[in-house]
Length: 104
View (cartoon, rainbow, N blue to C red):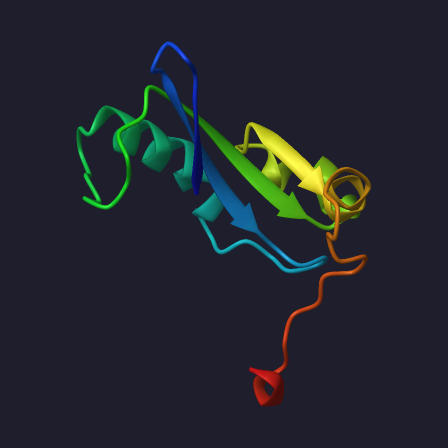
C-alpha cells in the first residue's frame, strides 16, 4: 500500500496486490480489496490502525500479462501486467519469479 497526496491535502490510498504470473488469487481475495479499501479509507467498519487516513482509494493488482483480462481480477480498479510494468518502471524484473522453499 502506498499513498499519493495532492497539494489540496486529499490523499489517495493505493491498495496493491502482487501476484506472479499464473499465481491464483485466494477465494474472495479480489472481491475483498475494494471493500477493505473503502472501509479503511472511511475508518468505518475496520480500522487497521497503521494505515494513513485517505480520502480516495484505488485497488490495483500486478499480475501476469495473461491474467489481466481474466474475470478473477475484475474487482481491482487497475490490472497491471508484468510486461506493462517492465516498460514503465525502471528496474522492474523482466520475469518476476516466486522463490522456492529452499531459496527463501
